[in-house]
Image 1 (tube, rainbow, N blue to C red):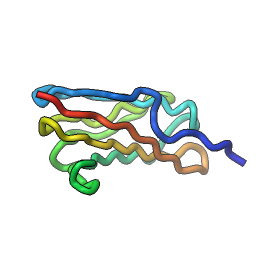
Image 2 (cartoon, helix red, strand yellow):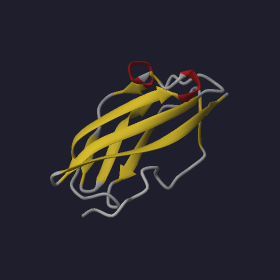
Image 3 (cartoon, one colour):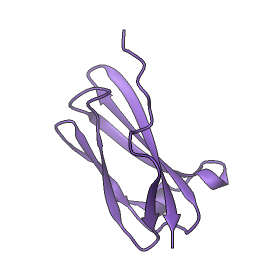
Image 4 (tube, rainbow, N blue to C red):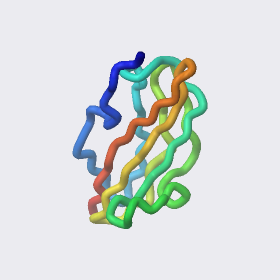
Length: 105
């Protein structure tokens, strides 16, 4: 049986300027190692969790050991809160973690 692990990453209160383009990374060690089958989605929290992945994510995710490098997060709207969800497989288990980013001018 797998212990319940908090799904939100440890880093909280992330802020990103609207002109910045940042590649975030997630270390999967708390959930499992050697992640595969990675999918990343971004949602506009202020708009009923509307999927905005095609607008604010560019590129694809990749893994090196237990670290997933996410697609570039960019083209954010000032004052909006975004939720980024990272889903991956480790062994025979599927996990999903998330973090939130506030866009600022």
